[in-house]
Image (cartoon, rainbow, N blue to C red; front, top):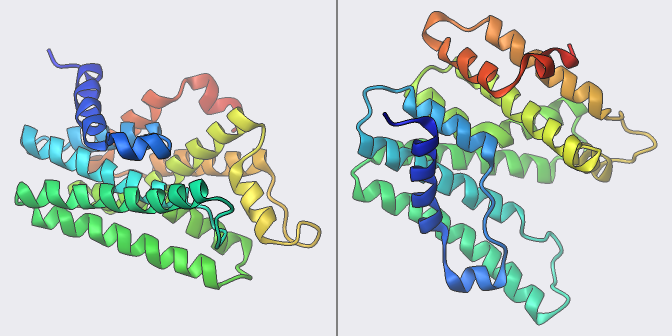
Length: 255
């Protein structure tokens, strides 16, 4: 019997083979696979029972290539000029590698004739770019608006895939779940959330509305379980995913 573990390993091996390039990895770090998004993507695709094995593989690999391409571009330093020649090469390769991973997703789906799914991922990329433009040019965004944009940026690729494969009502629960898990992991790893640091760097810490890590995490966690309680019968499989990812002790620790 095929288990989730063997399926995970099989798809992961295919993805890693697509990502590896000896020249790129010589100069920049190997791309990081976001494990929460990876696990959610596997679940969403496997829940669509009418997909062929080939479609499952193409959808999973191409979606993660897009996510990794976007994440790779986010690692590019913001400063205009590199201090050394090595930094300049690294910055250029960071941009080019992101473009390379993005090109791979298009090639993979085009070869399989999956034109509609190409459009789904292209729509996600367009939405993300539009949101990034808003963040860049709107310097005085209210906290609630800024948080909403950051939440959408974090989940856009998976939301577009979920709405295509399943139901638009999954948008809220996926956004809240991925942001909750991201913040919870950041606080566990660093003692603080990177989102709070970003908000403080963007605003005057003394006069702006403060972000409190614990409260922020609790708010997103509560939103997840509110969304779970409001799922329609056709989307109840998401409840299975959420509860499988957290123990009862973790679920109730902040409520």
